[in-house]
Amino acid sequence: MDTLSYNHRAIYFLTCSSSSSSHDSLASYHHSHSSSKKRAKVIMDSWLLLLTCLGFLSLSRHLIIPLLTYLSTTTAAAKPEDLKTRYGPWALVTGSTDGIGLAFAVQLARHGGLNLVLVGRSPAKLDRASAQISSEVGNHVEIRTLEVDFATTSDVERVVRDGIGGLEIGVLVNNVGMTYPGARYFHEVEEEVWTEMVRVNLVGTTMVTRAVLLGGMLERGKGAIVSLGSGAAAVLPSHPLFAVYAATKALRGSAVQILACGIQADGNRRPVSGAAVRSHRNDAQSGHDRETIALHTVARGVRRGSSS
Image (cartoon, rainbow, N blue to C red):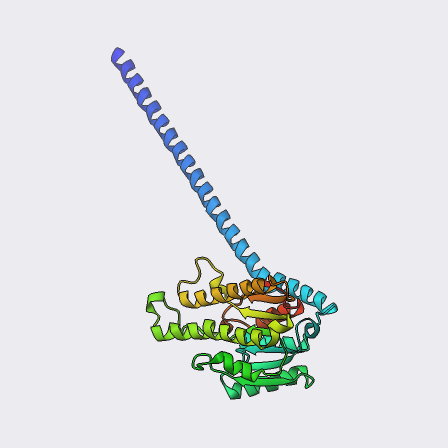
């Protein structure tokens, strides 16, 4: 009897222990499952937040920003800046045969009413750009062309000053530029490539700026200089596959604004404005984007500042 009771107690103890162990395992499973569900929910919420942000950025680029730009330009167009009176009757645009350079030339003629000096290295492209602008804005705008190869011309400043002799250049758009044939790291760029890029993007631009300033803009004490930069120079830590290109564009943008500050610091002269306009590479940019950037800058009177 005592033995039987002992066995019953042993069986009962084992049964209770087994039930307790199963309960603990089940509770542990539910806790682990609940934690996994919470982690999955956090991950899903993070992805939804990321996708929402990306969607908002895409919406901003394709809808909100163009809408705000349109409203700002139409507001400015209601009381348009008289660029001829404010700066002078002529605009000189480098790299003007296609891309954003051509878009600037069109908008300066159409909305600014300025005569144009188109600068490029190909006579055929210059003639084609001149014909296109005339067909779009009419023949009331006078257009002259100046052939200059910034990579090979030894005295860009003299050539430009001779080409614009007698013209009152009120607006200069420094758009000419070049980059690598393809994306590559700094140490992979051939010396011939980056030295030519520096000649075009920096030396050539500096010489054109000197030619226009010393050709009458400083003496008149009024004018505007616009230098086209690049988004590659505005992203930190810049674009690793276009290091030299980004550096030349960053320096170009800084130089024109510092130049404007230096000129305006001279109390004997009226202001000369400088604007650094950032844009994406021309071949990766739609015609609408180019026209929007150019129109936005021209409609605001080429005021000092930057536009992306």
